[in-house]
Image (tube, rainbow, N blue to C red; front, top):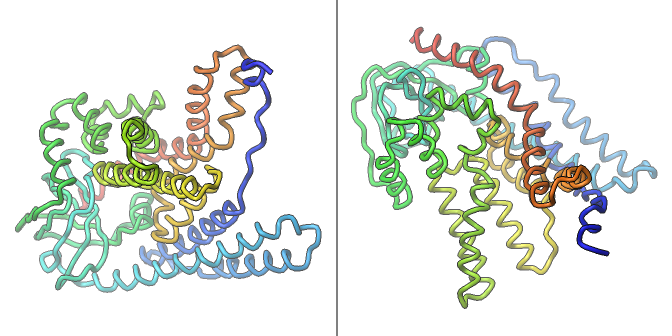
Length: 418
């Protein structure tokens, strides 16, 4: 059979692993528990805990079906995995909810001047207002994650003391979105008392120096470079140039994700293959390099997800087993949800997982279809990746783009109230 004939053979159906049922059950139960927890944290209406009974009931039904229904014997592993995922997701999300409610009570009645805030990420910028995710501390202990807004830029890792107000989020779209991401209060800064940037680590110091030399706030082109190289897109998203990427469907280019790590990994692996290092040492160096790059660019959920999948692939290859992308994806998603349930409501995580799932499942079919239409194989393989990822993320991106303007208006209105 010639190469051309092999290219036009219908690709095999992808093997869906049982970890898919585990991950699905975990995500469903986490979403339900966290939504009820958000109602309790916002305190705008009575919290209905009745729907929580659906989780143990569904888990018990799956176990009974796996035991008693002979027709479902081929799906026994899937049913057990779904029941375990439901219970595990409910446990970890309930644990987070209890901790969040306790932290919320600890913040009641506290003045902003009695707290210390530690900046945990890059800001979002709206009308010269910088908003940060921060850890609120008292007596050296972390109390809760909050959203702090001020009129100046702060470095990641900076310890800040302020005079201001600690307020609850309103029970609107913006407030609920922040609470579901783990931010329990909003802090309006009236005056900065002290800013201690401390001594950042070597990676963070290198990133800060590189961002200072790029100066992303001075020009859209520089802001684009900062987003692609350093993973900081705050300045670009605050400019009209951000809309160009949204309209053209290329917003993923300014978010560090699997494609960026793939390029870095390809370059590093190519260099290592020309050395005399053993295969195990090459894998270790590649893993360390990718972790460093993910940390350098801000450790976004999409970048960390890509790192975890690379680790899974390296471990499987090192053990002499055949790699399977879907198994690595669902195992990685399950670990993410177990460690931090609120990651479910972060758009970067949703977009990253949806696009990778679509690429792994449908990219061979898209390549085959494009080949049948006469598209050259090289172009078809690249175009199919773009088409699959774009179509998979549309159900997430379209509602987000529709609500983004309303969220901005709500945030601005909230700032005016402060």
